[in-house]
Length: 72
Image (cartoon, rainbow, N blue to C red; front, side, top):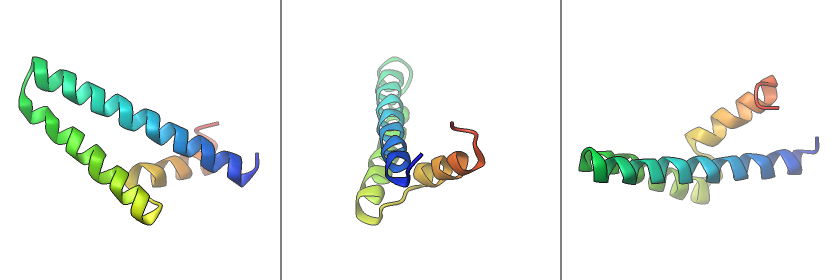
């Protein structure tokens, strides 16, 4: 698999993960406690970090998983 294709797959996975965490956080905030909105804040900070630097904790973990063959 080419490096460009792998990066594209990591980006798609990151957006899917961010969307799932955001929606889950909002649902839990409505149903359980507003404190779950902190997770939405973390997602936003990670997305800004990824946009500014090109890396965030989740992207580093996904790259490591791809290299080790776990995420194939």
